[in-house]
Image (cartoon, rainbow, N blue to C red; front, side):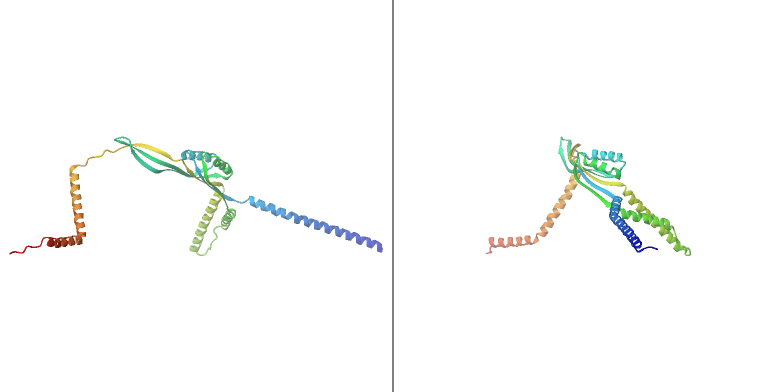
Length: 285
């Protein structure tokens, strides 16, 4: 049998144990709550670094020679395992003038403005190297625009749709043949379109896409050409043309007089009245 003092001591020990256990649990909860924001922050940072983007750039360069710059771009892109998708080269003639050099030759002087356009793709891992190459060119950078488009959700959605189509297969009604065939055809076309969309988007995320516009320095081009000697026209050709032109001029003159008939009529009447006043008729004796 426990005495009254022993019972009090046992009760105190139990209360002390329960108090320490509560404090430990509260400390553990506080530690967990304090660690929760860190975990959320780390998860957010991981999600930010895992974003998928499509990078594009638009560059305008003023260079000395457009042809040399295009060749340099092709060599650099090939070294970075990229590809030149499209390029153009134009030598635009802004003015042209012909100057006589001798009796049978002339100079044609042209003002030429060369310009070009190049579209390239560079692997993402080599994008910084190519940008540094562009920034260290001898020409002047007129414009430089770098843009990123976040396609993480679009890419994930297209991938999941493709996976759903692969799992679903070509399940269709079994009773109606026409309905089953139409359903299978629609499903196949849908799978093809979704796979194509996903592949295109995934492919674009692997490269940095550049549009490069090149403006070259204007230069003058001089070319000597032979002057064509004037050929003398035969007499009968000139005579026939003269007869035709003469009749045409005479017809125009008659038509002009017809347009002036009121003035001619008034002039004739005025002349008759004036003549009668100056030269009255003599009476016969």
